[in-house]
Length: 319
Ligand SMILES: Cc1cc2nc3c(=O)[nH]c(=O)nc-3n(C[C@H](O)[C@H](O)[C@H](O)COP(=O)(O)O)c2cc1C
Image (tube, rainbow, N blue to C red; front, side, top):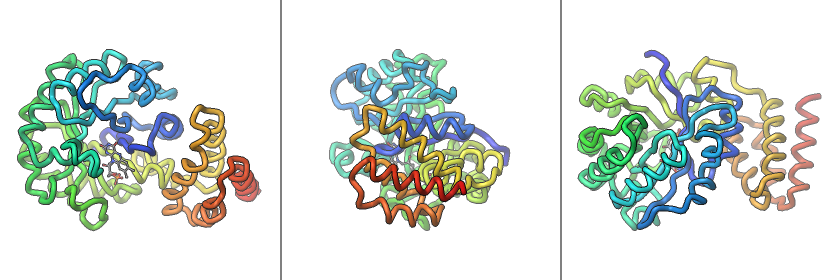
């Protein structure tokens, strides 16, 4: 399969603007998608959009020039369309619509993955947003294969296709599969690819070059989206694109020091201890050194105490 675009996908509460800045600086991602923002019954204030996507102040791009598309989540076609229009007016290069979020709260109000049970509503939402946004800009969707049965994806993809979406990302698991690694079903994406004339982006369980190639082969998709793996392995983008060597631990710890400085100087400093621990929870799957260091910092609450441990690890790694 040819190498296509590589997209840094949405991760609510994890992949925020700072993380996008760091990861697009060191990788050649073609596009980022923001964390979802929930739309209920109003046009969200501009301040919400700027907080979600500060890149709007930079023409909708990260500092290194990667476009960032805003993702909306909701169930009401009219309000989603109005917000889609607002997001692009503010500078988002298109919008993405989330139909895959498994969070209980979101699903109770029939947003996110709950809509996988209602392809007609998906159709209405995508169609309304597509009609509201300038046809030169993409309106995309992101789904799972279904609620509890992957055969549901046929009707769902049909709805997205009939509604004229620009492209569709498929996370190759059902909502009921959660994140179980062995539940990944890439081949269903290939079936959809053969049936619908709709650009598809394959997503789920890409951790390195080999799994990216396996995903491309099984799905027959050139375009891929990575999420958790991009945090486990900070240069995953270039590993997937160019078969680059995995980033060394010494380079990872330098990146963590840089990240810490940004976080501490930024307006989110109070969250820093939790944020850095959150990143370690991903990194430890790839780096044994991160596992050991995580054990050292997990009980620390003070910013200074954490950065001292990191500085020491930095010295050790660069000796
Ligand atoms: C912590 C977390 C937050 C997520 N937030 C979003 C989100 O805001 N919007 C969305 O469409 N998907 C979200 N997802 C799903 C991911 O975008 C992706 O579909 C999933 O993690 C599978 O890809 P991966 O195996 O590369 O991680 C989230 C996943 C995780 C683990």
